Image 1: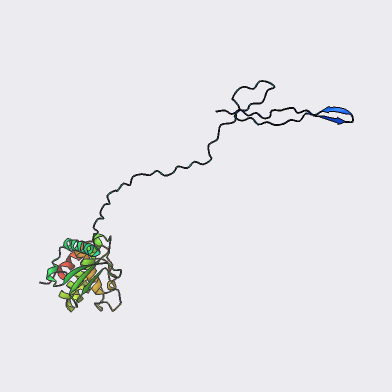
Image 2: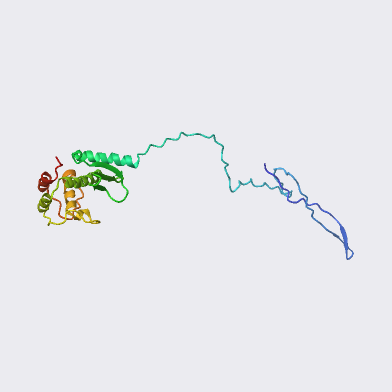
Amino acid sequence: MVALLLRTLLVGAFSLTAVAGTAVELWAPVPLAVADPLDVATPTGGPVLVVPPAPRPPAVTRTLPRTEPVRRTPVARPVQRESRQAYADRRGRAALAALGYPTERLGYAIVFRPYVGRELGRADGRTRTITLYVKPGQSERVLRVTLAHEIGHVVDYLTSTDESRAAYLRARGIAPQRWFPCSGCSDYASPAGDFAEVFALWLAGPGDFRSRMAPAPGRAQLAQLGARFFQPPA
């Protein structure tokens, strides 16, 4: 729809005014508004008809949120996670089975506990217990070597004598010295620790050999040491 705007319709109003005895005709334009003009062409000399521009859209349009029906989606039940103790038991039993050593002849209980940040294994002669602390994500190889190290300590406790220990030191090229580490000293810096590390190498295979007493034995020497010192008690 186009509106026609009539700018001004001039209506002449005449008045006579005497100025110095002269009659002067005054023309005074009077604006007259015209509502709702027609959209037609304007002849020359007639009133001016203007077509207004189309209305502009607003600068910002906002879409209000639609109301949707509430859809209930089924909630999946959480998977039952394995407890830390169950994890330690499972991994520890697998490591023990992989070693294949007759631990029942040692007379020691073998237990598995979650790792608590202090140690990986312990052999306690007072309680006759071997404890393996299972660390999350620990490799099977590390678990086997750690458990074998502790079993080696128990074999040492049960089968070694002063004479066999002296013979072991000679076979390993270690000077005679105190067998067990002092309180607070590193296990790997003692003959007892070397014995357990070599035992672990013999039973679990190559791993992280940590003895500071002597280098890891070769295959032939390892077989000789195993046959002589690492057999379980009768």
